[in-house]
Image (tube, rainbow, N blue to C red; front, top):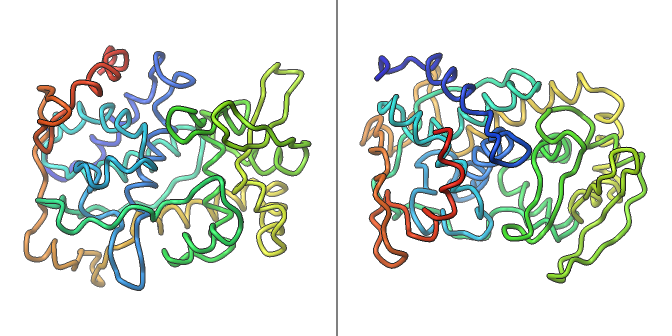
Length: 320
């Protein structure tokens, strides 16, 4: 048990768990970045709902959203950290994990502020359907990201997170990695987008994506329709070209937009203290660590783990 507020200790323990030989490409880093992004990207600036406060994925309403498929692995990876530092909220832990993962994988230092609370129930969770659909085009991208308050430049910079990780046909329906080294943060995603020929491929599931076969690496890389929409759109494309040619500028802009992402839905005073009603009335509420006892699919407590999920997670527990 660490001293409450010792975020340096939490950072250290997050960094220590990133190496996961049994998981995708040997690293938990990319899925932790995705957890931070999806736990924040439900924000709607017009209604001021959703965002990084609350850790809503602890509940089926949000955690069971098909757009969040696979993120149970990220949450499982972080459970030992939560057990050791029980004072930290899940909302802070999940966003901090994404920030730490980017840095540990060679990316920029991203500003992160503490203070998010965990909701005590699911009554304030946003509706499903607020996360992007990779099968869509530029209009859809703007609809999703403008709702959160992002500009075209910020949309392209944030899309650079696709330097990390890979798609899984049993989760998103898409399959493959965007780059050859998906555990190293870089601007390769933008460079490959511009320099390679991408051919349409329809998977057995009927999902449409674009691929390039790298003969040197003997590996097929992929791009989503939303990725290539950045090239065909006259406002998005200049930023793709800039980031492909200027790694430092991309890192700088990504650090700013990711810091903005994990603050979505958070209001702070001049001293940096969160002023959201849930935080003011309820204080810094850290939900208890989820139960280690699995439940049945139709009989799971709010922190439990259903039987099918327990079986799926077995192979990833060796290092926890």
